Length: 416
Image (cartoon, rainbow, N blue to C red):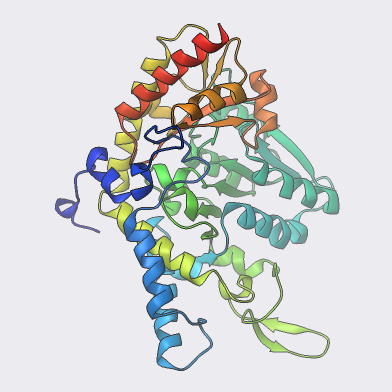
């Protein structure tokens, strides 16, 4: 949507009406407060309607049939690809590979790029912020190629400093793989500057965008990344939707990831040739309805504009940090400046384990995540076994934060 005058005002109290699940109560009769969007965001009616409509009107396999129904399904599937490309500022839909999301995308790159180009002694640079999905695939690639993993240490408040990145990038660095927004701390590293450092050293940059794409404007051209991963279920879309952005140049030089139908050109008895990108990375029947649903989620976010989404989230994070600071015995992790983070706030409470916190909050209808959040390296850096985490999306309000604080006061009373 190019005309900013056509944008709708982002009013969370109004937005909430599009999310039926937020109207339900728990078995204890409490109104749900959903604060676990970093794990999976909720879907508005517009997305669930799009899923149902596809199944009821256009369900057919794509790219294969010449009959009208299949062609209509293909148009909607490829239309969603074009929407996703535009949403992240990609030059065209040919740079978008559809798959189940970030985990599959990082595995794709680690396999199809890493096992082809990494050699013994080469270095892959990660950060201490990373989700396991951006660590384990590189561990496997390093095991098979002899490459070495190095980690960018974060500051005490969970930031990534450019001076530290620059000191660790060298002539053996072949890949820098870093989150665009920490799922634990909300930290948003300076990606464009990291891209410049990586490219100056002849390395590639992969950005784990699982959290970032849902919370802030993204322009892959401005960032300068070679890869960006996208998880649809973090951005109001269906589970098993999303994909990978990669430059055409780098996709052409990569090996295939999965073999099977549709991604081939010609198959002989001993070898095969493959379609051009992105189709050479899309083997078999895809998650067609889910990607169409992701297209509807993009439409939903675009009506507000991601600048407005990010601004509203900064205000909500600022309010959360302010309210949590009023509770004795709570340590909040991550940058103190809300402008440096997205909508995830993790904390530790004295005398109550995060799992106990989550259990008591559940009795109040409040949904938070407790655990290591698939970020055990970061937990060790923070000096805790786990944290409790509240994470937000467009439907969250200051009232939700007030309910959280009231719930935490009850936790203190229980474990005092």
